[in-house]
Amino acid sequence: MGTDGMEGVIEEYGKHYLITGLRDSKKVDLESLTGILREKRGSVVQVFNADLIAGWEHLFFAALNALKAFESKRNISKSLAMEILLYASMQRQISNALKLIGVKPDLSRVAVIVLSDSKSEIQERLEEVEAFFGGVVDDEVLSVDQRKLNLIKTTFGITDEELKAVGQARTPEEAIKYIVIECMALLYLQK
Image (cartoon, rainbow, N blue to C red; front, side, top):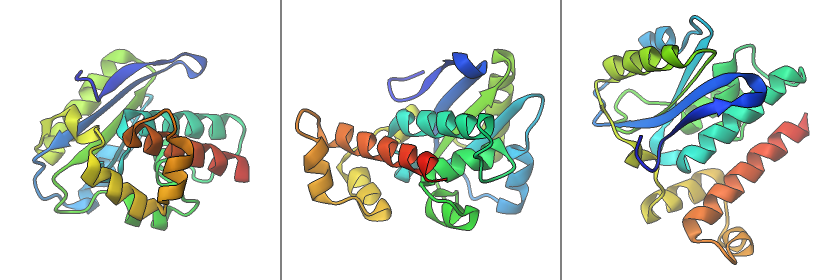
């Protein structure tokens, strides 16, 4: 793993996770994507427009909130993968979440999260995603640069004032991650 991707275990839920990205993905048929995202052997996969993901932490906390929602019966969707998408997009409606940060047919940079009961299953699922998208694993697509920071601000309606308020001792990139994580936590509390 590079510095921007991450893998590990969410101990309290017994779930192994892998968060990474793909670049140079080929044009994909979104109808076929559901086969990749289907839960298999205790594992789930979700994919996102990497240009709207504020680092691996964004997806880690989306997964954590989704797991928490299922545990406390506060989940909005019936699938863990979809619940992760809802939290990552900070939306309560699946159609809005998909429009906002879902993958599009011609997307070349994809963020990926795999959650599984077993570590060995994670690599198999990542290989399925790689084969489907035809891209190259590259954690750099998760990192936040100025272009991505501006895109995330615009898409999620984050103001310069909000960034300044939380950015006192943080870089703008760290501040945007903090705001996104806080917004996901608020989504969990809204139900």
